[in-house]
Length: 205
Image (cartoon, rainbow, N blue to C red; front, side):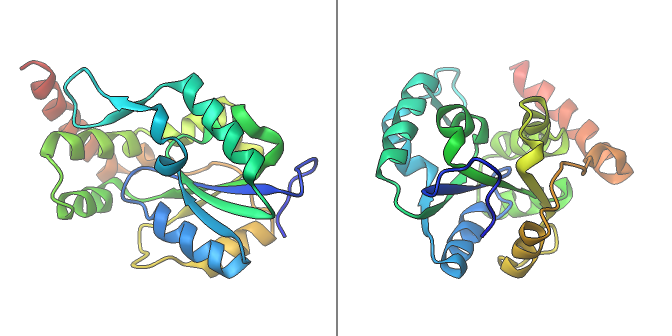
């Protein structure tokens, strides 16, 4: 099993990444493969979610309530869980001793935009989430919070379904670190520039 030093025997694997990268499906498939239980963050943090008062089509998290909910969840954990999350730093700050590893899924912004548009999301919501991936928001947060030493990063752009064998191979070799930078790709950079201008128009309304 893939445990970093000092982790409790009742442990959690976090699957993170932008909306649309395949977190939930990968979490379920990985949990089944490893004999763990899969859990969705929104279920654990339901009472910490409040409506975004800025008018965006989203819910926001009250962080202290969220940390308390995570601590209570961890108290009930037996053996192992695989949790799909948009907020790995909340889980680590609330229950670091139980976090065995973070799996960070990445998808090229162009492909991510195609996936999110196919979900029927509003254009502004799609643009905001694609830009977050293009600008490496979750990846940068992992690095800034010193979580990259127990984070494995996978490029899931070509995945049509969860590739559990690729995840397990990365985990088994403990191939940790955050390396992908979409802005080094001219195509992603051009898309990010264009979507930034589009988002500016939304913000000006």
